[in-house]
Amino acid sequence: MTIITRLILVLVMLTASSLVEAKWFSQDFEVMGTQARVEFEYPAGEDAKLIATKVIEEMHRIDRLMSPYKPKSELSTLNQHAAQRQITISSELFDIIQTSLVYAKTTKGAFDITFSSLGYLYDYREGTLPNIEQTNSLVSSINYKSIVLNAEVNGVSFLDSNTKIDLGGIAKGHAVDQSIRILQRLGIENAFVSAGGDSRVIGRKKDRLWYIGVRHPRDETKLIVNLPLEDIAISTSGDYERFFVKDGIRYHHIIDPNTGRSVKSTQSVTILAENSLDADALSTSVFVLGPKEGLKLINSLEGVSAIIVDANGKMLISSDLTNAN
Image 1 (cartoon, one colour):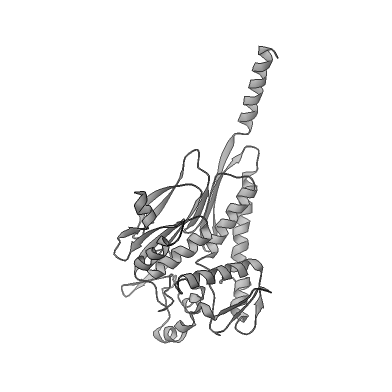
Image 2 (image 1 turned 60 degrees about the horizontal axis):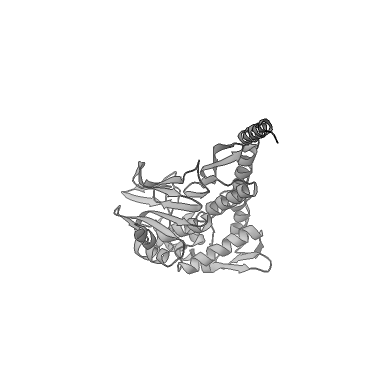
């Protein structure tokens, strides 16, 4: 091979390399009653819009399956009829409910998807809440033990006629994980997916770590920390996401299963974990448990970290983060 031939070969290789140079694409959209985003690096020549559409369609599919606000969703059907008879559901919804019950047992009821048995009476847009009589009547129906599973047929039934399920503390995490799986199957190595307070990143962003900020729970213009992340999920639960103030009291969407009222011990909880489903469920769990018991739980788990802002605005972190400093 002559020198000229070699030079031509090198030029051809360089040209080919430039043709497949990776590009970045991002798209914001609404799903599950919140803002969502997908961002990823893709090889030139690939249809980024089509890739993003697959993610968006997947999130909407899960919303149609698990939303308690859509009358025709599988979850709504369950809520309407499971107290009368066993309802057979999809394996996907069954698995999420089953995982939710595992978290309920692990947290001694702090994570309880039956909070909606009373929680459905809260209207955060209108600023209304259940009265004392309704609370006293329905708070005992917040009890995950009222859910009976039949794994052989993916069957679910309720022991309490007032039981209602809401998967708001775990479904978005599941949707983010599913979206990441789709991107990975399509050969995407660097990506970010978020839905509300739940995010997951794989790889890096333009040869650097991803940076995800945790907002100040009392000032949306400020961050309490900006975290450099890679191949990890992060979930934040805050009392500022859906709330109203009445007679000087802040009522928000994270309900204490024991009282049927909004948790008062915490302003926000951020969890770092390997996947979004776990991070989502744990951020709710720790919020309900409160800073002391919540940190105790997180410190007992491998590969999980927590950043908590208590009712007084003080930031606390899990032992692994303390040791890292």
